[in-house]
Length: 405
Image 1: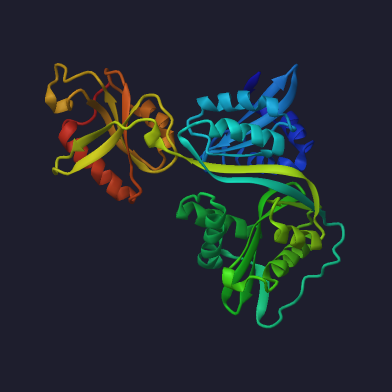
Image 2: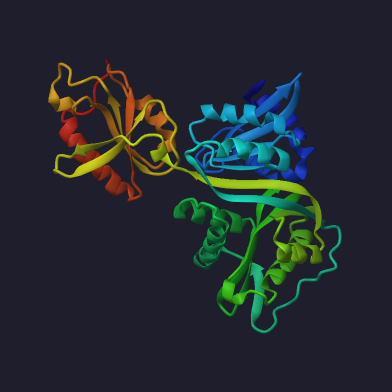
């Protein structure tokens, strides 16, 4: 049986995840930060569990950004049920992060969808390092190079390096505003470190997830022109020292690609030891694979806006855009002033997240049945999206939106 995690489930859910601690850090960290329900943050989501004979067999969460985080204790046979349960979510599965056997099974199911295109497929080795003692003393500043924790004022330089890292890994990014907010939050918590050559940030490393006295290292990246000079080692040595002395963590874990021999040598030389495998898979959806139907809507200004047509209800990938809820009921008795051909506009609007259109549907009140939604992805500023809404509203709903009926 698969069901939603409730407040009364939190203690047994944590106990299950803690029994597989190293490969459950994303789930535990997000649960501690955002709770078991989807919120505004892209990493939040609804937590669900698989129950067998009264015992938890798996815990999973599809985040708002589309990552399916799963802990199934290595059970690949649960993948089909978990993926089927995600069909009821308002956002698509675009990636998988789980212990290796489960991740591989989930990924095979995801790749069977012709609308899905893989972009990152990695079998990661899981490394762990206790911090009870540290023979690798972090060096002081030498030859004009210094290493320190980053602060909010370092955002622009960090953004450049982190953006290059995500591009190299084919990892999709959140919005610039979200990245800035997350960076400022994490730097206040001392979660990013960097090596500087003079005033220039040349190498970074951070903590991607934290739970109790365990943390996961990630985002290790050095500018290409500064590689092979030991900068990553210096940053990681300082990170290790700070985590042991100041943050009082007991242990650190990290993931690195199985075929990345250079990174594995570096981590092993710093005292990390291998301890299992983890799957990290990412991809993108092609909404055009679902429908090629489009409709041109003309605004009061004469400008034409082309929208894609989807039957409602539907699931859409996250991202900003404009939408028109419609009824496919012909021109009807109200005439052409409230319909275009067979499309009757019921609500014209814009949103910062098209995957959240169910919220807008709940605000719609009217007597006409909603049958379709017309979508136009729109990454322009919100003021531009709203001008489009006003232009269309002025032509097709001149008396305002329909009253309850």
